[in-house]
Length: 282
Image 1 (cartoon, rainbow, N blue to C red):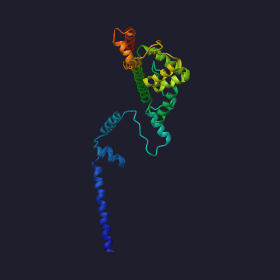
Image 2 (cartoon, one colour):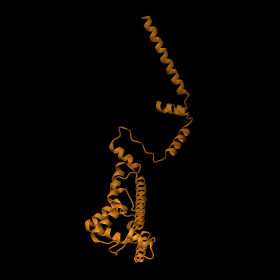
Image 3 (cartoon, helix red, strand yellow):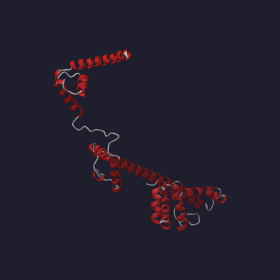
Image 4 (cartoon, rainbow, N blue to C red):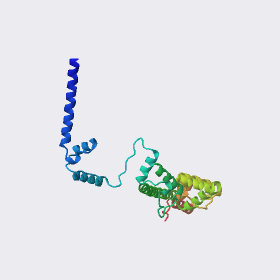
């Protein structure tokens, strides 16, 4: 019994000492804070406020730092309504239709359906109105630049194709192009033409040559040694020059001024060389 009594006495002594320390701490606080609760007393002690005025100045400075439009981030247990209110407070419109987008001047193919999709997506992602508008304008500007770049590329492709075909066809260029157009119109019409333009096939010299050759065989045209009509392409003229140079009978007349067919052979070769090396088209 005596041991139990001694142990209890020690515990009581330790509790009394702790109480005395707490009393001493409270005694160190300014008199104006003596009637405050434990939480307020702890705050005053941690901040070291010496007077009510000092505490109020601290509160004023804190509000100035945070500002009057402070938004509290919803916690994990926040309701759907609280979360919606949070995003709306940050600038998200109440409904997708409230996003205001302007169609830039001079824009071709601006899709209103895509703009509505953008509104729905922006609202779903909780974008503030100003952020969504800026993103919309930058995307439209980027799309316009891409469109301009594509058109410039198409123009360069067309110019390169024309240069290649003019070099190969020479003065027969217009005739060959007309043959290609007639072939496309007869066998595919506008649908074939649109498909070729979409895929850039109309800028491929190989494809244009193929349609021109089909047209030549269907509708005629081109010059041969026998026919003597139409316009000859440079490549065909070069082939005929090679064939004539391999013809001993023709070369005998071409090389010998006293030969009765010399003038005819000279004229023929001159025509072929002119067709093989036409002047650049302007």
